[in-house]
Length: 331
Ligand code: OGA
Ligand code: NI
Image 1: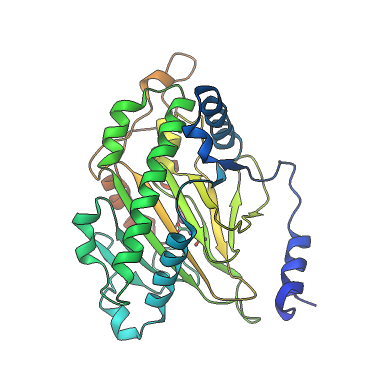
Image 2: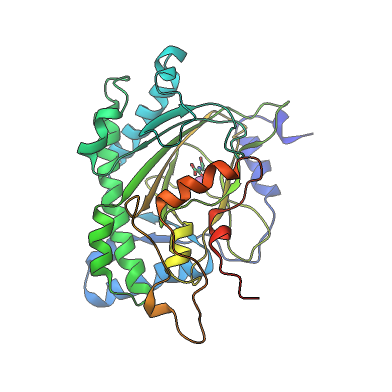
């Protein structure tokens, strides 16, 4: 019997059992509280983060300081927004990727198969909150609290990641504080027995890091070197983190951006909030000097978020990852 005819917990058990087996260890879960402990504990946490970045391209974090109520509030605000009548949502409808906020339902980006989304900027909050929805009435408050907390976690993570790469974090930290935080709120329908199971097709994200919160399982990742999709489990209170194209560039290929996708959940409609973190729009990201030498020549061209936005329209009918377009061909 196809999985889609099995309901409730039985369906998820079947899906679990049918996950392709992988030679790799399970996706790591890292206690971020260790970053603010004594230097030895902090050093071990940094090592764990660097290993997860190198070997898997993703991990989940717990003890990150974002309260469960703030996380719940953000998911509620997102879900209430998607439940609004079409007229309310259409106010934000646009296919123009340069807009500070936009809502869309169809698959004009080459990868959206069954999702509606609201995308907007969030850092610094005071610059962007004016563009955010007024409905539901608690949206700005709840999403704002979440965005600020997630920006803080992203700074902590980048600090640890830069140290893990042996880079000096200070000048980069200043740039990150002023950097782009881009929120993508995704709304996926429940898997129907007639439909395709893909909500969002395989891709990688452009920034340094993506921090993702999902209301129920559906995110699947393909760690570097693997050829099987792995489902990211929902661990209460945890946040999923993965590497984007610009961190692959900065690390000169030591860390690879994570290929991921979203599948539809057989039990319920699903919401996810992806927070993508990178440098300011026109700030170029290049391979870090410290990671380039004779044995490790520069592998990527420099590029900015603006360059990514310019790349997107040419990519619509023939989806290609941004990072691929940056690789320097040394043949
Ligand atoms: C994204 C994304 C995955 C998900 O928004 O870039 O990959 O689980 N989302 O919705
Ligand atoms: Ni993504």
